[in-house]
Every structure is written in C-alpha cells, then in structure tokens.
Image (cartoon, rainbow, N blue to C red; front, side, top):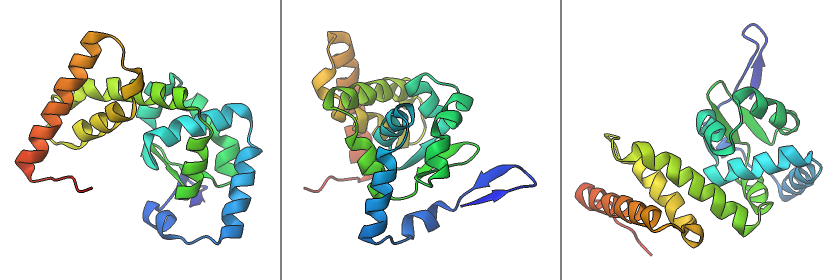
Length: 178
C-alpha cells in the first residue's frame, strides 16, 4: 500500500496484501489496535467485514446509508493503523484475521440485519445480471440472514432467488461439496 502524492490517492496491491504473512505477535497487535479504534470506526469495520474481505465502496455506502466521504472519514483511524486499505472504488482488509476480528465485534442480530440489507440490495440487480456473481453473493447473504427474514413476500422473493441461483449453478456445472 502506498500513497501517490501527485494524485493524492492511496493505491494498494490486493494480491500482495492477501499473500503477506504475519506472525502471531503482529496479529495480536493488530487485534489490540482494532479494540482501540473509535466506536464509529469499529462499528463500520464490523459492517464492512459482513460484506467480505474486499469489495466496492458503493455497496458499503448503500448498506450502511453513509456517503463515501463519511465512510472515508470514519475509517481514517483504521486506514492509518493499516487495518484496512481504501482505493477510489474499493476496500480491502489488510489481513483475514482483521476482517474476522471486525466481524466478531457485531452481535448475531446485527450480523443478520446487515446480511439481510445486503441480500435485499443485491437481489434488486441479481435477476437481471448476465453473470452469476451478483446472484450468488445475494444468496450467500440470504443464507446468512435466514433467522431474520420475516414478511412472507420477502421470504418468497428470497426463495425464488435461491432457486434461480441453484438452477444457474447446476447449468454451469458448479457443485457444492461438504
């Protein structure tokens, strides 16, 4: 991760971040840093961790109902501590253990709520998407939110979405292994 002073932007190499090996001492230090973050930063990191180890800032904005500027401001302490990297359009946790720790900050009800919100947002575009990625991401979040899907119409919509994903997976030869 490096700051380009001419463009005044941070750039990161996601592959390099993911393949970097940390010792347990460093991971422990990172987890302590996470605990020392401001509450808003920790809450936002937990919400982002629900979405995955890396992704688009636009989706984060939609899920947490914040602007990109608000997200960047709230995440500034975590970026400075190198817990998460931000680019113009995306984010990446600097280590999977950081993501896991941020995810663990949320209680089960909050996790389910975030997964449900994400599933609902992704479902809007999943049916029309040419590829399967958005559909499969939506169904992943549906599955993670099963305990809080309440209204019958919403359950029916998610059933249909899951069936569509199963059919597309079968058609493309994707299988699940235990």
